[in-house]
Length: 67
Image 1 (cartoon, rainbow, N blue to C red):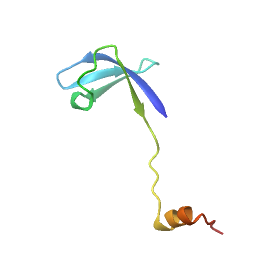
Image 2: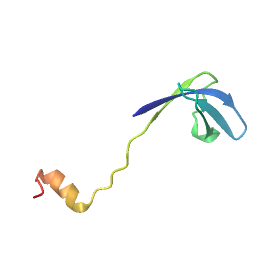
Image 3: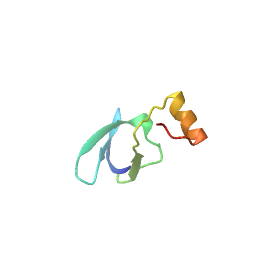
Image 4: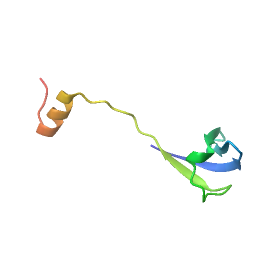
């Protein structure tokens, strides 16, 4: 899932980001590339974390089905 934010304000301790629906988020300044400016759009890619067991991995690698 891709999620776009526009940089709306730089602060000493972070940046304020706003999405297309108007929701704002404060993000740590050191986690934003330094060459960006107010008005630039950044994208976050969000994906679920899936943990697999060794059995799941082996079944996937060996292409077997569980009964």
